[in-house]
Image 1 (cartoon, rainbow, N blue to C red):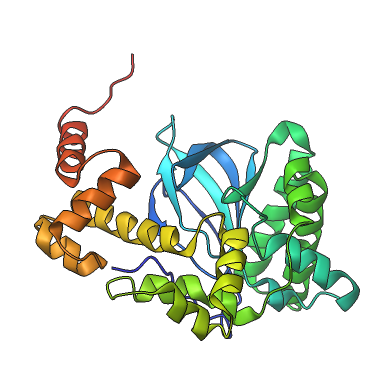
Image 2 (image 1 turned 30 degrees about the vertical axis):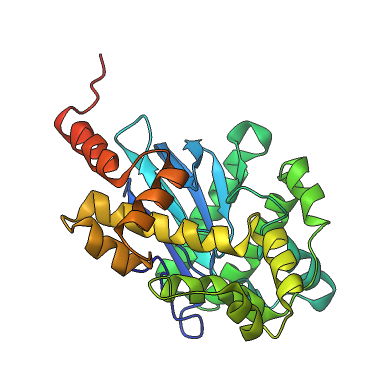
Length: 292
């Protein structure tokens, strides 16, 4: 089981559409992603954090962030999705460094996204811009990619200008790192069922252990060891909620030493045991919430 969503960056630098899906399993990708709520509400969840969006709200999701889209209070949610490789915009060099550092990497100790609510900017104008971008991408008239580039660039500028002050301040703390350092999350995701040593990951990046550990914590807000456990626990949760596999099988598939190691680590991260997780899930299915 992997969370990495493969998209051909070379042949498909964009994926732009409107959907009414109210649930998307946990995943991550190299793309930047923008969600704009056209109707209803939904939540973006990651690592115990949740951001709920209502009609007119926008959310920018950083690359490499594991996130899940969940139903919110309403049963109906209609929203635009704009996924894109920021490198494909071919921004002028004088601006590319600042925009890339702001949007391609999350700031120190950041949440998974930048939310902007409809009352914090000209939401009607942004909605028009986004709908025009979707239309251009779908109809593919002459020079449509040039228009898509222009619209996305305008949208990024508006997000940058209207982002919360905390996000802008934190980004000033970001340091330059080699690109291969940012491939480590994919490597951890792919190899999470095998023994992973931080020293070996540092060597893959041609970095010393101490420098790698420092950079990793600064970039992802937790130690590399904690990140590995975070990935494994999330995968174990998916198995617990969506399969009938026993704990020994799940422990093996998710990279834990044995069943006891799985139970101990799972309780440490989730606050409940794997068995309790399954019981809780079963109770939620058999006794769904009702509204008056």
